[in-house]
Length: 224
Image 1 (cartoon, rainbow, N blue to C red):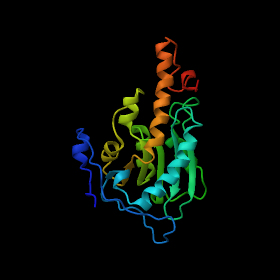
Image 2 (cartoon, helix red, strand yellow):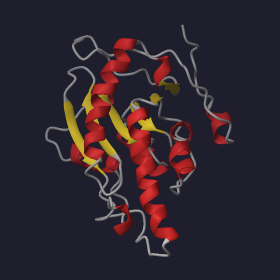
Image 3 (cartoon, rainbow, N blue to C red):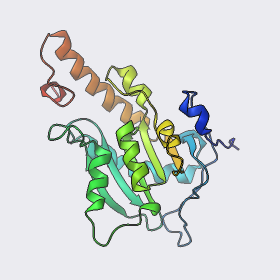
């Protein structure tokens, strides 16, 4: 049995790390009684803290995000799933070569926002290959999506050598007193981590050759 972890907003806002390994709620896709997540706490947990069934379900959707990531300007793919039905509602991939704010999560949220009738944001889970940056997590907060599942952490992406705004997603969520939900990290990181490592290697090769990398989405991002 894992220990429940309720994120203390004040501690997060002064930079104290989040606690992993919280007890996870289970939302089976075939359960008609699924309810919106309680808006009482922010929970942060890792894949290891999940039941086998829930982890398998999250891995299925993360695999879809992984496939989208391979087609993006950077390896960020995202899918938004209705927890009750299990249906994939929207997809997104990084299109930073078109617009620098078109991260995978932003792309997916924009695509969902175009749907008619409007979707039930409070019933959605967002899956993303890389942890939401502050911009994307803020978009999640404003959309009211109460559950986020990611593969590779911001800390890992930074360690691989890609510049990041090193402010993790629970910290962003904690800065919004009206938002509460659940953030799960490390799902299929054995597949997403190598994707980000390869991206970092491509960027670094240009730096070592004294070539203009063209930003995170320029020519150095192309596999070679």
